[in-house]
Image 1 (spheres, rainbow, N blue to C red):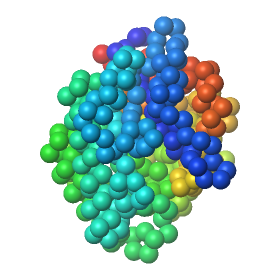
Image 2 (image 1 turned 45 degrees about the vertical axis):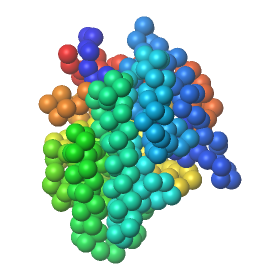
Image 3 (image 1 turned 90 degrees about the horizontal axis):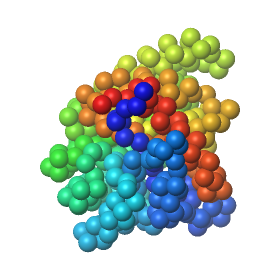
Image 4 (image 1 turned 120 degrees about the vertical axis):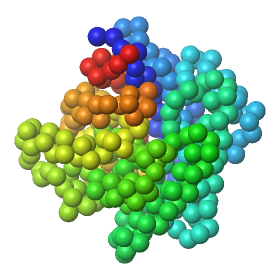
Length: 343
């Protein structure tokens, strides 16, 4: 069955995450080339509807002028693509800093949200962006420091998120916090839920679910006390646990990344010890992508979700440069929409 929604987007950050000039890393892939990969993909006459944007050099400078941002918008729109969600540059070494840090660091975090919202405003007024959220995380790599005082550190992150959410609300934007095992205070399904509830602004700050990362939530990789599955689980055990986890986080979910996970933990460069994305058709993949997506997409339109985005970070450049990679991804995304979409 053909559905108009959710719109199908491709992420731009796989060209940058885990890439760089450090020894052992592959060079970044520029925005133009990532757009080329996206527009070239086609399955039975269907193509990607848009992209989710990474507000970071060398793709899009977060300090760009309005005119420079409009040029980016022109380039994307000229390819028949829309912009959906925008990743804010929240991390140390970029515009932002740790949401769990000192007053200066937390102020920088909030400033990074202001810049992301300003870019979103330019894209909205241009017309290339009509939906989507601003994606954030705690910008605190690893959970060791957080574990020194989980209650106080979660409260500190929540206080920062709350100030950031006030900025977003002023711009008419919503923030989506990405749960992932490498981000302090967001490294398990229960800790993620605790943080969302501590912020307490569901109209402005919600959850961004990623199929690959939330799989590792089930296994309790960085929080064994919250593991819902053990190795050797049956299919029935998997879906019982999956339903339990999603039932807690779905009411908060305002952005969804379609992805595959092979159960490994992987990282590269500064983005280390995180869930390993793998290709959509990887035989080692742990997920029935279409079935798992259905859990998160239940009631999605009522939560304001208008698109879904493929996320596949830290693939080798050779994989990203292979056309069949993107056709396989697009085919999977189409299957998700056909099974669970709406008009």
